[in-house]
Image (tube, rainbow, N blue to C red; front, side):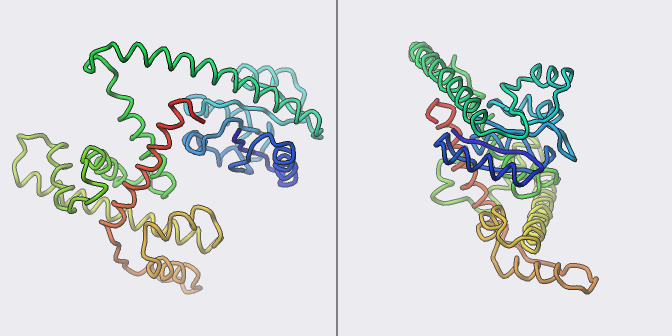
Length: 315
């Protein structure tokens, strides 16, 4: 089982992690000190089975966080709290909380509760496997044209959105262009071996967006605008990782993504500028757009294949 712990008390998080590991209940794949740091698509791609979440946290409390996660996180949630108000407890259960763990935490209670939740997940997984097997038998007898076609595209969209969030550019205008390029590359069987030229990518994406009736002048304008939006998004991502690196050089996101998506001299230069005490504008930076898009595609492909593995019931 894969756990995520959200509690504003570092000692509590440490104790819970230790108990989970010592009792061989699973592994802790992430932590947060406030509900505002938790996003459903992050939990999804970390394949979190059980979310342990504190009721009272300074920014966003446990109940509000669970409410926000209802449409994006489908694992189990266990709430940690010293509050015993019936109204709050009742609201938490109505939102799908499996159990409460009371503070001060007790090892026996934690182990008992988590084993019960684990058993429920394993039972539901077994039932799901049976249903999937029956569904596959039915699909074998269906004509291919009658089968759902949107599942593949949905998972690509989720994968791309997750990556854009990790790169710090999910809200940038160029994010839409990157998603369009990602869709195009996923449909191009040769992309992994030999990624198309930027001109070919932007031309195909522009034609898809504008339609076959668009003039060459309109296509050229869209290509130029799309290229500028993506370039700005990439620079924003570079600044995002440089900021992470100046704050904490061992930040997992910085370590995983910065060297993959960017040439390290560019990241290092930006970090030095941010650390400088002189209040001067950041210098212009040259980014390798083709490298960024290629890595974006390969990372999305890896995540996409991992998602298909999870959705098949093999966890």
